[in-house]
Image (cartoon, rainbow, N blue to C red):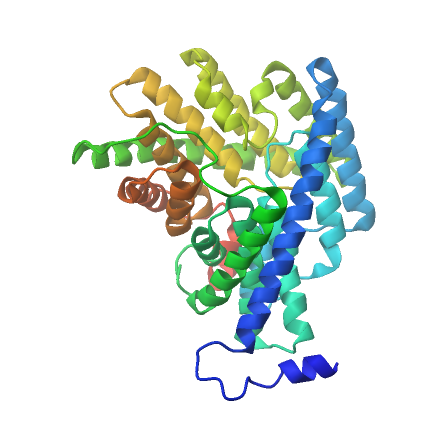
Length: 417
């Protein structure tokens, strides 16, 4: 308590912008990086264990994993989804409740490691964001300071996985609202500081985040037509984004008709995912490694089309059946598949340009995050030409459905209406 009281006082005789708030953001980033690193190591080991089961065995393994994840949620507590995180940051004074973190960690580890089509980014964002709330309460922060700590915590978790401090920081702001992207801009410095320290710690623990993770060949811009290609590719990806959104709504309708406990729904979802993974093994998992595998395979056009359809279905089932995880990297996988299809049909379009444009547009169509998605993709793919990605991102943003996929991104007055 004495140290807390000491930290409550501003640093005396300090001529710099540096203040005690910087120490809090740094501490939050360090702890967030440790949590993300430990989570990733456990996830890798559990994935390695469950990956041993393949062929027909994947069906009972994924069904059983779904059942266990559902039982965890049923008995320990429902950790909620990204909708709840956004809603609490916007309308609950920035407070994220850490009491459901054990349920989120355990259920998401099972869901991601067994092969669900959702990634670990959403669980990490929720856990580290709630840690930011907890830190804020310990140091008696209120109002916008508490909200900024929660956002900084979210940014630290997101950055740790993607290795892009600026992109992760902007994403934690953009995901909150689809109309006023800079509404929470006052939290950008806390988010940047927390993200940078989280990135360093996570990279040291997990040895990830240095350089691109998806291998695209070098690209040289050939002229003004490349921007036109980026827009057209973004248009195609936005159409697939609409397909994904309505596929998810359809699956949600069917799962809501099942008036049984959540562990039954998650088991049914696992069974469906296992069947898809049995016939199309590349659709298993969330796509972190599978994107590189897809890029190196010389798959025929019809096979890529089948992968595209069933990966969209797999993500939709994973989202709506109660499995836990994030859909950003899986959407990047869908974008890559679409890009390969387009490149097969029109070989004169550069594959790297097609991949980043389709990745950007489909993700922005669903998440409404054009700035952060553009920056993230330059980091994750090593695609150095920033502007074509931005054109594709803006195409996905302005041609997205008026009602956002993440409903809590809407203003409260529109939600009530």
